Amino acid sequence: MRTVTGSPVEGEDFFDREVERRSMWRKLDSDSLLLLAPRRIGKTSLMRALCAEAGEHDFGAFHLSFAACGDELACVRELGKALAGQEPVRDSILSGLKKQLPGIKSLKFGPLGVDFAPGDSPDWRILGEALARSIGALEGRWLIAVDEVPVFLLGLLKQPDGLARVRGFLYWLRDLRQDHHASIRWILAGSIGLDTVAARHGIGDTVNDLVPTPLGAFDPKTADRFLLALADGSGLKLTKPVRTAIIDSLGWPVPYYLQIVFSKLQDLADTEPPKKLNTALVEQVFDDLLKPAHKGYFDYWRQRLTEELGSPDDVHAIHLLNHCARDPKGASRDTIDRALAERIRAPESREERLRYLLDVLESDGYLVQIEGRWRFRLELLRRYWLQRVAP
Image (tube, rainbow, N blue to C red):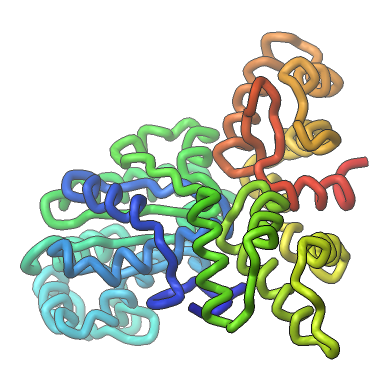
């Protein structure tokens, strides 16, 4: 297995997630899923793995992303582009589209997905429904795994009539799932919770047909096996104390950060003379990761609060995280409440806001409640927060 620190992993580089895959296939037999996972937890890699093994479960499957889409039509075109890559059924899909859109003069699959003669492009809703019907007409069942749905929606919110358009798109997508439920299953995912975005704008019913499916970090035993697999793939020897030090120092063994730490250990092992791989070297790696040169690994955790929560909730959330970061064991509920009281004086309003913010911060991977205290899940993130964010 190779060390991969940037791109999603596929094939032999994808590790484990066997329990999660079994659970998701069991649910997909009857439902579509809402995959809930913080950034860099491995959701894209997992969705690609599910698509790769879909044939074993009598599904056809493909994966696409809405991350770069600027409007609703771009999302539908991404769907068309993903279908264009399915060579065994591409001609059938195109034939089905031509039957459903008889007024179109020229219709083909191209670099943008579905291409039309100038001036012929139909409304995005009509095109999306035609694509869904064409998929539904194929033999068997199909899985459509869509990544970064919330990123697209947050961008759409910034456009004229943004909220109305977000509401219309999500209701349209829900109708699409329900109208073609017999033949099509969906997995919708994003590094920001789609359920959080929908709830914030009072349209939670647009996703309530989806089965929430959280994806977390590796457990310590799996993380240990993961590090061993990386070591075997690179010819590096990691003793049990070194592997334990890596896992304990992270606190929350996310595959992405395990890969980063291992890669940095590789770099040090390749020096002349090579560094001895011991627990002191692990601590050196963690210290190095907190230097300004590596801030890109962590800055997004702060930036996404503004993207997801907006003002003033993003500032409230940062204020709470500042208090939780000061002690590795976290902060008590009373401490957090007093911290928010500095910004929201009315007790009833403060309690409602605090519950909402803690729900978001927990579901998005920032905090976890242990023994009555709210602490950072990822110890490396807590150290970064203390060093570069908290006053």
